[in-house]
Image 1: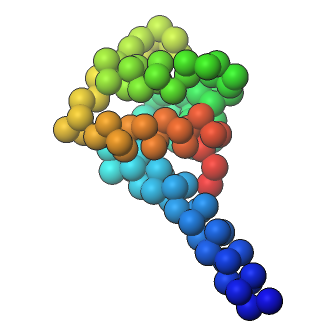
Image 2: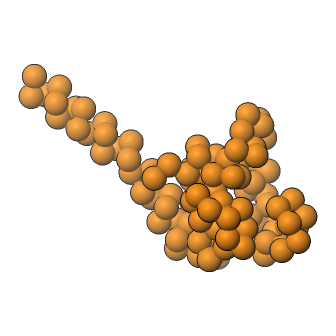
Length: 106
């Protein structure tokens, strides 16, 4: 019984780690200057992005490309500046995009 409880606790901790890491990633990359989890700021909220791209097979690749190249016109007149690997690594970008597409869980 103790082993089962320990395993459940470990699974809970490990499954929460990517969420915390992704929040930290977007904060470190300063994405939060323009985006929030659940409210529109300069750009759309992460949850609005998740909803817009829900069910779209190529959403992760498309969003990663938008982050790298920047963009304008999808969410309004304010353009998003490009973000190269010096601001957010490919690995961190992949984790952040997955987190966003999962609905930016808190």
